[in-house]
Length: 171
Image (cartoon, rainbow, N blue to C red; front, side):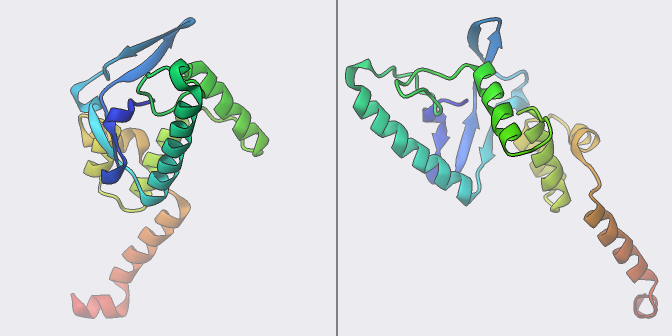
């Protein structure tokens, strides 16, 4: 959950400067674990549109709450502006995934999936590493790079293409 002042939908970016953690029943705000953890994450157009729609909804909730609105500055809040408890967000995600018929998956596992898909799509590992807030690309590759069957097939075809008659004559 990020403070709205650090969300620039016009620039399609979210600046990560704080993190919310839950210790027992208490929710605490702290800085990311490392300097690399403080970063900007670039958003795609579809995600930006969803967040713009959410901002519009939140503004309507702010008006409806009037003086009872809690100005937390958070992007994701209850209708009165109070922050969402991290454990509630994780539990709600698990309920949504179960209703969708998905296997059990933690909210944090989406990070692994997004990183693996980005790498499989050919996004440079340096870009993925920066988006994840890693200090080295080696950690990103060791942790997140998975070989998808389609990517493995493309690699096999590209390698075989080098050995084909046309490629051999051009060499």
